[in-house]
Image 1 (cartoon, rainbow, N blue to C red):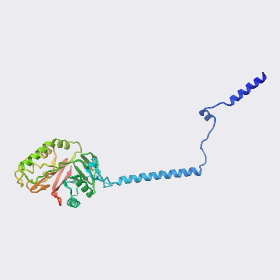
Image 2 (cartoon, helix red, strand yellow):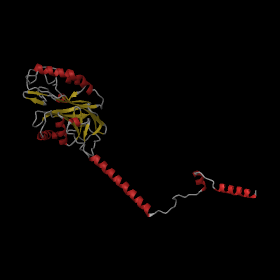
Image 3 (cartoon, one colour):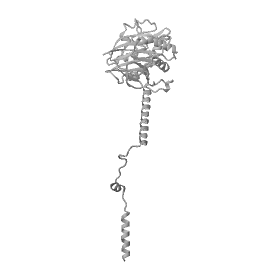
Image 4 (cartoon, rainbow, N blue to C red):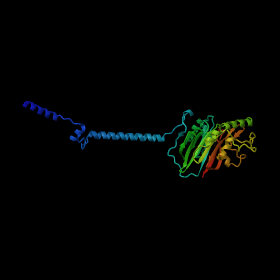
Length: 336
């Protein structure tokens, strides 16, 4: 009996000495100081130095990539089918916008759809370089516009109806068919452009030509009205290369024998919508200043227009473009 009691006591002591603990209980019982107050080693210093150098390297690479992005030029694609509208060509960096702007010059340069040689483009550039224009619209083929824009070396946005070249301005908004430029700290201008691919016959019966133009106007007039009526800034410019002459050019008093007294819908409706034809607003008369922009044999017509809203036109004139049958239209505006 005594031996059994002794054995029971020994077993109880043994079992109590093998008690288990949870991790949380062990942490409460056992004091652990971790890495506190441990002296730094040479190895840890080496790791810290390597991490610092790696971080500096990454920051330098990121800064380099940022500078490259800022300085890169979004070059024109070779083919129009590869372009995404609006397309922003941006060779100019560190652009500044004046605090105040009370007047500026705009110009429409028709380049046509026939491929122009590089020397012709250079001659055109020389023809217009003295205009000191703030805003320039280019119409014609994509090839002619993109190559001429590159030759100018100014920022430009290509939209459905042409290419808008600008200086001393910043883009506030751009869509596939218009852009809005901030030309000063408190003035914005919405730019519209349309190229109707003017067709200029070298002869033929006047009535046949008028009939063709009228059929095209009937087809397109609703879209034109919708386009020029879209929202934008209070100041607007509409560059138009059209197949339709101006009613103010076709009168009984004209010097051109093939013309007769006739009204053309596009110009008349734009006037009804309170748009102003810059050239027509400032010339003395259509008989003394024809403003011809296109020539084909004996047929000469004013088919390129600068229309405006919210501006005062101070003057307007045309400039023959060297080595071509085209003339550019220049308009000088005063901002109210």
